[in-house]
Amino acid sequence: MFRRRRFEQIPELNTSSTADISFMLLIFFLVTSSMDTDKGLLRQLPPPPQEQQPPTDVRKDHVLQITLDAHDQLSIDGTLLTTQQLKEQIMTFVAADRTDHVISIQTDRATTYEAYFRMQNAIVAAYNQLRESYARERYGKSYGELVQEQRDEINQYYPQRISESKPSTGGAS
Amino acid sequence: MRRMQSIFRRSSHEMPGLNLASMPDLIFTVLFFFMIVTHMRHDDVRVRYQVPAGTEVQKLQQKSAVINVYLSASQIQVNSQLTDIDHLAALIEAERKKLSPENAERLTVSLKADKHTPMGVIADVKEAIQRSFALRINYSGTEAAQ
Image 1 (tube, rainbow over the protein chains, first blue to last red):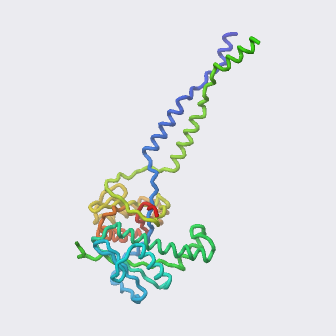
Image 2: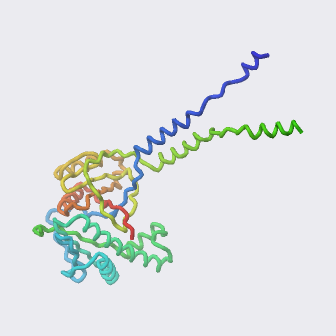
């Protein structure tokens, strides 16, 4: 009687340490992994210039010349302005001449990257705002809610036409 | 009456033990969550940099098709290898060969540059990237409060 009962009782697996093991795994993953999501401004570079490529002619009144000098000062045609003003200027300029405008950027080798990034940010912000308002007008929806085809259409309606020239030298302080 | 009292007293004395059987399951759930949302950091970053902040930054898609270029005024690093401006284009091509064909097609170069880097350095790096035909680039930045 006593013997049989002992055989029937299968000892249960002790699982109290599973929690500790999985905690260790969890801590390992927390330490080795990084949650950081890479964010930034996505831009397209032109293909490398060919040898003896004739410079294309653009009419001067289609060009918005933005200059960033060695002291990180932003100017359009010699007039100093802030990034907020730059955004507004770009918006009026692009809205007036949607498909033929050219935004030309001239930096200096001594310009800091931060100033350049802020300028790029202002340009992207200007285009985004124009596209957003056109998306609302055309589809009654925010640009972010549209499907890819509709976005492509809006991107073609407001194309980004930006030209960057080589940074100038000699603007050292 | 006596019997009732004894039952009552016994039940108040014996605290039921907390059942910890579901504890491992809970922790495993958290573990799997972290395993899915995170990715292993495999670049040993040897360049000191602080990216600028902008309001229009977007999340970079398809992390497996990204080559990271870390940049400060004096140092250049591609993925986990320090290099200089002369070898940059070749190194990017070599890194692209390591990617699968689909990823190589939609390759993005993420430029993680320090905000005090002069544009001369950036322009040289961009030219090298251009020469290696990696034309989608991402100026890495943090999201700024508006």
